[in-house]
Length: 283
Image (tube, rainbow, N blue to C red; front, side, top):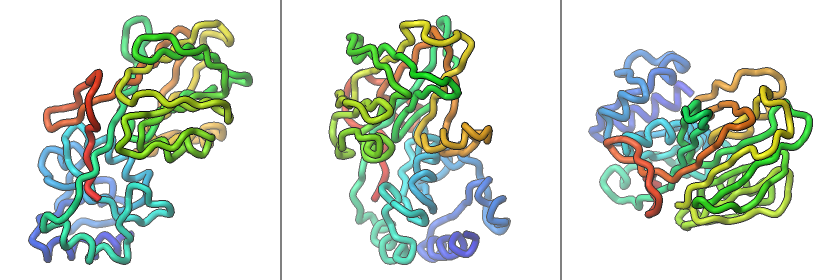
């Protein structure tokens, strides 16, 4: 990875760019010759974020940089490359015209997830892909009351529930049998686990999940994961969920999870009831 980052840095410097490197990346790759910034500093001072890695890396940094409105370009060093779409072996030929202004901007919608407990917000995170509420350590199913735009839709009994943005519709939701939405569509989806009938919903309607019945002890937590839900596989083994691409929290009976579309701008993240996609990512 250090050699790859060095090649990217040398190319960018030759193009007249001032290059800084993210703090944890510098530590892990043992790079000390470049200026180092943490993610908030990059968001405040940089004009462009260049992400080298896979889709999970892009999801994690996208969530963190969204409030700053910094555009992102992804160089794929992973396997799939749905949103890190520039092949590593061809990054110089692709980046040269992009840095000269020849690109199309691909704007992606975001979703803010909040867990409210007795009127207090105990969890707050942004998602580019999806929000997953699952049963965690509970042996049986969970039952969730689902409301869309303030209207009751269903009492959903399942192992868990995926609420996906249009971007996330082609990720974990699709693998669980959910519908496929193009990233620019104005429809998201919610998909119960395991494969049961899924639904598409307008992507700019707020969604609220509630626990209507005491179907398990009140003190038993339920997991809520943001963007990289494959990490829930590690939770069963007791491993900490500390990947930067994932936000993790827990809910108990009586909590409500509110999922709201939001507008990311240079002045912060603003929730909106309706409108168009917000987060932009150059590709």
